[in-house]
Length: 364
Image (cartoon, rainbow, N blue to C red):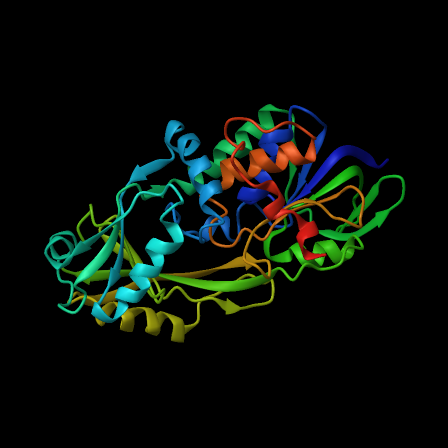
């Protein structure tokens, strides 16, 4: 006997978990997760932080709307951020102020005297920075578990090892899994991350051009040990970022290498590039590479997320293309997507978010 659900969400990462928590009280919902456990891919590999300007001005409304929820529920730990720069980078600093000056984000430019007090061992040519005091670490595992718990309490069913193999459209969606199990659903929510375009094509939708990109992170033991209160440090030109983590340093070369949707693994060249860029910035000695990993960040062609019903395929809802900011924007993104999906009015969290900017219809 085929089981029917009002809504089938494909993917149990932060996207699928968060929207399930928002809609579970209004419909019979199932989450279909292909892996052995939820959050195996991008969600479980994030060096996540909440940074007001990360992702560009068009993402700021989602990030700032999510901030109070994340703080009120205890998922943020204040850290602060510095966009490090040299004299030749002043143009990039000026451009940053032009792009984000009216965004409502909090930041200021500081000089060498303040920078070297905050980042000991910084090489002399890094003599200025943009300081963002409100940046914070995100408890990603805690946030993800919070949404899964909320979804379960609302009656949502989570099925792991439930990889979708075929989708057929009649009066309802007929979904067949790789192991032969069959389900029916009134609506499909595409929260499949790097596999979003593949799932869309399976349902008969035109691909939106959502491209996965590999991002590498390494955990280093360095001397001296990084201060526990060191802020998140980013190169203003976008070639690295690093932050402390339990006495170690998490470092990324800020790579974006196009990839197929796969179980991503780090490349040795990217690890070497990250270390080389760190050594051109600080006097710290790298003593060991203790861990290295990679995840996929998936972007639509305009690098904005996609929330909404497909313009040509009825009852197929896109909740994808969230790039590297899907976790820091998850409260507002899920609330907004649920309101679109269930035809609910905006509330205090989403009232100032321009939902049309994220509609899949923009690619028409």
